[in-house]
Image (cartoon, rainbow, N blue to C red):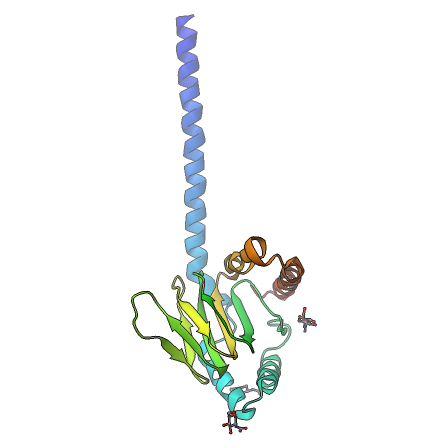
Length: 215
Ligand SMILES: *[C@@H]1O[C@H](CO)[C@@H](O)[C@H](O)[C@H]1NC(C)=O
Ligand SMILES: *[C@@H]1O[C@H](CO)[C@@H](O)[C@H](O)[C@H]1NC(C)=O
Ligand SMILES: *[C@@H]1O[C@H](CO)[C@@H](O)[C@H](O)[C@H]1NC(C)=O
């Protein structure tokens, strides 16, 4: 009787050990896989931040004081430069490792940039964007033709003082940025119609891009 108790206990501690050993192994494999994916993610990038900056400047020059004209210039250029079987560009486009959008408002907005797992190039087209990092006494000021570069993991307070529009290009792990955009629907705006539209368009564009092999 004593013996069988002892065997039971050692059996139990053995299963306990095997369980935790295999869990640790899975965790290690996940970490290794993430690190590997992170190192090779560049191979999926289509756009080049410097080229996009040249394009943003050309758009400003070709349509001064005309936001719609600038956007049209950018869209026409991108759709003719990048064939549809390479990357699906849409006015509402997105895929998993790159994200390109015209971001802006004619009213002005202010907030936290969010801390994202992606590098972000903000090419100002119209208006001004101001920014500030903790510790700074003076604000950073970005005007048309300038790029506000926010490296991955960095965060600032930003303000589009009056109206401002920009060509935004993010590269990195885009799906991990999405909770930032969605969470305030639940805590504040309750605009579920917009949430539904955003998710629908994002998933559609991500799958259209995956379908042509654009990760
Ligand atoms: C797109 O814009 C770039 C930068 O302005 C320019 O060099 C290129 O020729 C344009 N391509 C097309 C197809 O318009
Ligand atoms: C653009 O708008 C600014 C300010 O309203 C004005 O000073 C400038 O002359 C305008 N430029 C063109 C090309 O219309
Ligand atoms: C972009 O989104 C808007 C709003 O949902 C929609 O009306 C428009 O058709 C979309 N554009 C494209 C090209 O899908």
